[in-house]
Image (cartoon, rainbow, N blue to C red; front, top):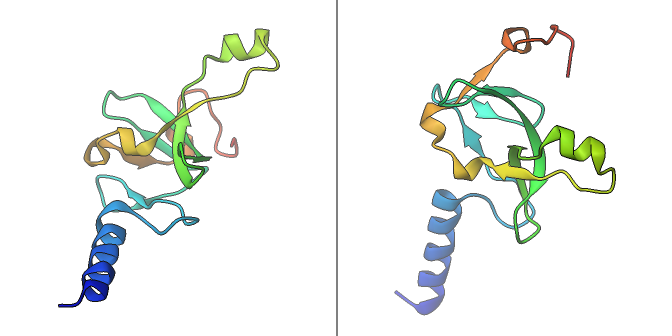
Length: 111
């Protein structure tokens, strides 16, 4: 096999196992095999509920994440930026997409 064929094969393997090419968001799936997208609500392994946001990784590539910021701190510091935990930090086999109506304190319309 030529070095070019090895390069193409390695690139395909990396894309299949790690995610998408630069510029395309990673694909995440919940424990039921449903694709997780920005705006959805998920139940984490510890039973907590989180909203999924579009974000970027450390290299500027599109990613999905959950809120990592302290809301009270953000309210007191209006120039502070919101931070996110990438979904790649979590065991997705324990995460489940939930309907908005299942979230405590939220109405069905409330994103």
